[in-house]
Length: 461
Image 1 (spheres, one colour):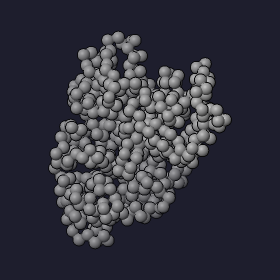
Image 2 (cartoon, rainbow, N blue to C red):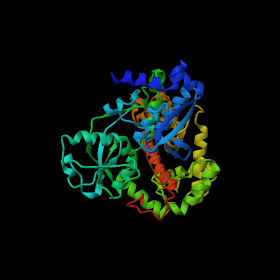
Image 3 (cartoon, one colour):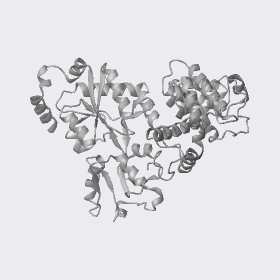
Image 4 (tube, rainbow, N blue to C red):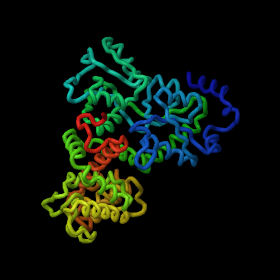
């Protein structure tokens, strides 16, 4: 009964309703879609190629779908993002919003596109892992103010009256996780997708237990308007589910999140301190020449050789970029164990692979395909793409091809393709691990962390 009341009152207050045009028509005439979001790894941030983030990409795709420009604003917290929609300062909020009963009284939710659980987060080495809410006595628990986490804790307080917490008005959840990682607070609550992404940068973070069942995430729309924009969002999400774009986007941001365990993370950070500084200028120069992000080249090199120029494998590959003898000869690399020759040769080889791929493969999938080809060979990659097509999936999407590559170990499948057997599962691990190292290098360089002066135990400091 509340929704018609909100709609009626909103129409009385908004001049837009007097125009006799639907909200969607007004947006298309205006030529822009006003979207409010929040800054964070799961929503919106400025990355190496500019604006990025799961919610940002979704919103940009929706604006393109409607044939208008995206006008993005950033709210300081969840409450502000909802208020922007209610006050008609934004057409929708794309801010990683969990659907809750109290929020549904204020805004109209669109279709769900992802499910999360709320998780209690603690520092792994603290020895303070609770098994239930009763174990939080005398502990410091902080959550983001106005969040679904605070709302849930208030509901849980009725059953656990001893539960106490602080609602932080100034810090967002990702920042609170940093405080947990640095032992400044004992616990916080975060959505499972935020935990997965932030564990790459704060490896001390660990999950004690889930506080909720899976909850849907959805965009928020105002009750003051008709259903035209809301319904267009449903059509949009149906389309990107059917064509695989939603799966592709989820894989882009979350597909590699769990490929670094704590031990590998520590070793990587140690080598960032002790080894990367010797070769960073080489990666930067090679990156400028080939138009490849130097941090990606550095991540590749680390996966190949742990930044050891004298590295050799039993199969005969050598050097920082682990070039084969034949590839080195084709690239004019005379000494594979010479650091500069190896870096420059490897970057040129990666450049060639990027150019060889079919034009219809778009970024960032194009880079992931080229990485797979660097590991397993362009012929085996094409075999996997052809098998992906046979299986009824899209051969131009990494999220589909990475499911097919392991089949190249299976005689049932590799006997059907020209290049035959390959360790395709290793190629998948290779790509996903490089992506994880790359994200770490981007994160550090964006924060201007000086290589060689990094506190391995507390990288955020």
